[in-house]
Length: 115
Image (tube, rainbow, N blue to C red):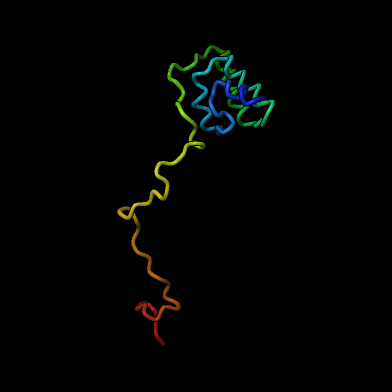
């Protein structure tokens, strides 16, 4: 499949979705969109967990379920999202207590028995 064909899939950046992110994102797809994803998945990665989710949703639609009116989350999935300003999200205000060095090998530690 060419890049143009990949871009025509009903979910942007489909290859980078996980099973968890896929479950919520396919709820708004119709049977035709699901079938396109199933065909693509079988021809490429053939991930069993993804096929199970896609085929299960397709079966549900065939049994009478309706595509969700709630739109799928926009933008890339969490596994492709980029961080904000970068760096650690640790905050000194939420840091734990200071760590005492181990008593062995530190002659200034009063907890060390002498003798």
